[in-house]
Length: 151
Image (cartoon, rainbow, N blue to C red; front, side, top):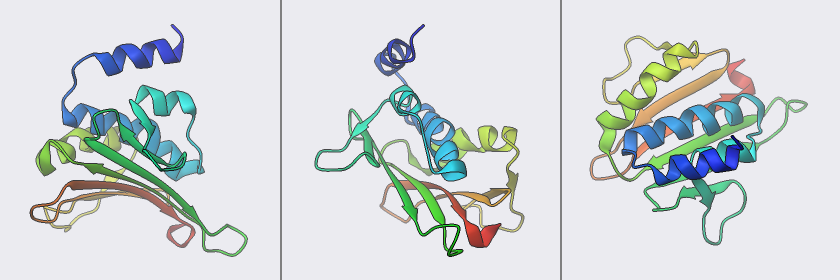
């Protein structure tokens, strides 16, 4: 099946906020943070479109419940390279986002960082860091990042 047809079928199927957050983190954030690139097929499979007025790295779900910002700054030559994928999950809440990404992150080789607060879990793997956090009254933020300084 062509990836875009599969993406349309997945987007049409009802999904909860946790499933959508997981799809974005696994299909978009992990590849982007690791390499600085993400395929158009992965973006489509995650149900993301360009935000109105945004560029190709400023995305959202069709209903606007998930906002995604891909940021690439610096470069390896100057030792200041940083890649960040930030997901703002405006639906579902902290527990749902954390529970949705914990298993896939650990299956992908990420290890939970011990002694982190329960309301701000952190996982790491080979220079990549993933966190979930929510300030009171705000959207849950899932952030996957790579920094040359973390290597």
